[in-house]
Image (cartoon, rainbow, N blue to C red; front, side, top):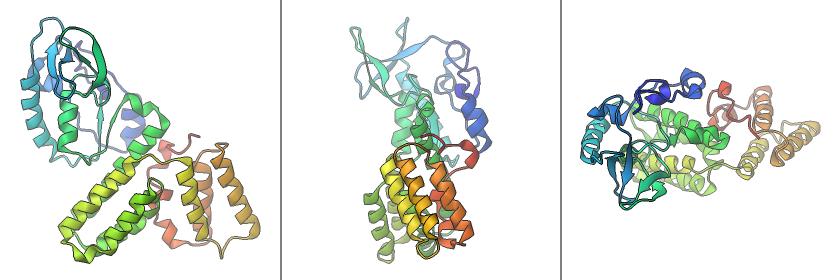
Length: 306
């Protein structure tokens, strides 16, 4: 909630993130959550921190030492029940927050000193309840690679939710997997092969079991970061579909662009744009449906970093 500009922080302020509300906000709807104000602690309020065991910390006010752990956990259980009905495709947490921090939150020892190894009370409850929903901290979204990975995953989750909303059929899953194959390959060859075997043997499983297993592997695959080496592998796969179409000069140009990307002279958007050009020029219908070539809106410029 504070990242959207709402004045809900302990000091009555906010932490408005203009990338989230402006750039990304054009493409998503937000469900604002502020654990501390929503659980009844008020605005403004005394600052709090995590204390005790790293795996099971307590939420305690800084000066008066009031323990709000039970209040937060009971509220979180109710709020997560509500969020289960929101069809969430992702969640962005506030870094360093004792309630909402996802990574490296300070946990104070009983006798002083702190270690950055904790997770906020609400963030921990959320990720336990919804292990397959993509999550990230707003601070880490300033890293181009992490930002691209997270946003790619939320759009992938939206596509997956679309197929689940219809009648579950093996044919529908095969069509979805066919479109996502190269995107999966760009993250993990092992998952790519595993998912291919899962779909190929789909008739041997109840459809609900098949969909649940596929969703788990799909989510895990996309959580692995792509790399230049992985992307070059996919680009070479893409080029193989044009081996009967491209002229010698066009093949050489593609290979030169691949090398320029490999050595970080140009960003990924450059070879992808050229591939998309050839998809249209040579009417390559199979590749036109590959989400790898258009996994998220172009105006987000997520593939423009080198």
